[in-house]
Structure formats: structure tokens, C-alpha cells
Length: 256
Image (cartoon, rainbow, N blue to C red; front, top):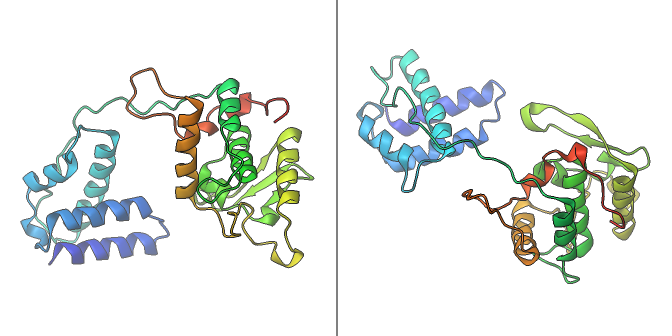
């Protein structure tokens, strides 16, 4: 059996069981491309290790790929498609887990002050400002913020309905009065027709839903303009996602 055929069967099984399996499917398709049009039984431990190691230094993603491949080869072993797994039995010692960057109130103020009056990456100043305050004040993931619809944002009762988030869970998220007022002002600046309550809450200047790539691109510009960077020797610079950490200890800055 071809490797690609076995991978397709495995992905169909996982998805039929209700797993999203999005990140894992990306890893497995990359693995298939790296191996080429090869029979399943001809994949060698050397080639698997070469795929796992990649071109650069080892990162935590090595472990993610390793766990994904182990799951796939357990599937093939159970069905008698291979006699042994070419995946390493153990993971090497990897760098310590990523430590998120904790933004101070002063740094948040600098990010807000760096927002230009003209659209950046197709996003208006009010859209960028509201998004940053929402991630910081409510602790949302950027993916959760961008799928909010008009009916999900209940500024009057100070509640947000987060639909089918991580691990397929939906939840209510209460927000403080200052953040609720920020959301209400944003809604007033971008009126919504009553017949379109399911439309995206956050929209570009052209009226289309905001996508994550645009926000990430704009955030990198703001971070550099605000002069915010890590000084602890970490490999990654402060991320948009880091805004959500420890948000329960934070408040919207005065005037914000």
C-alpha cells in the first residue's frame, strides 16, 4: 500500500470520529510530501528522523510531529499494514516549553498609541484598537475573537458567547464595564443592519470579515513601532497571542 493511501485512510478515520485533526493533517501531509510517492513499508527510520529534525535546531514542534507520526503508525500496525514502526521510540531532550510574554499596562498603552489613523493591513484604527483591548481584557484567543458575530457580543449584559472553541467547547465570557463600553462604541462606529445579526463583529474597511493573517501582520508593525521586544534571550518576540495571558489581573487603562 502507498504511504499516501494509508495516510488518507487514517485521516478519514479520525475525522469520522469527530476529531478536528487540523494541525495533525498538516503534519501528515507534509510528511507525505517529504517521503514522496513511496510504499508504506519502504519508509525508513533514517528518513523519518530526517523529517522530524528538519533543517534548523530542535523545537517543541519536533515533539508535536513525533506524537502525530506515532499515532499514525499505531494505526498501521494494528491493521497489519507494517511490521514495525520507523518512528523513534523516544523523543530527544528538547528546549524548555515556550514562555509567553507578559505585557505591562504601559506596553499596552504604547501599542495602542502606535496604531495609525490610516488603515493598516486593511484594518481601521478602531478595529485594531478594539481587538487589542479585547484580547488583553477578556483573555480571548485571536481565533475566538475573529469568529464573534453581532449576536455573540452582548455589550449591554457584558457577555460574549464563544462558539466551538478549543476542544469543541462553547462558553460565556463575562467582561468588565470599560471593555463592554469599548465594544459598544465599536459597534456604533460600524453599524449593523438588523437582518444581518450573524455577520462577523470585526470587519475590514471593505466590510469583509477580518482574517488572522491581517491582524498578525498589523500587530508586527505595531510591536516594532512601540519598541516592544524580549530581552530574556527567548527565540520568539512578543506575540499577539501573548496578550491573553493573565488577563484576569488586568483592567482597561484609563481613557482606553
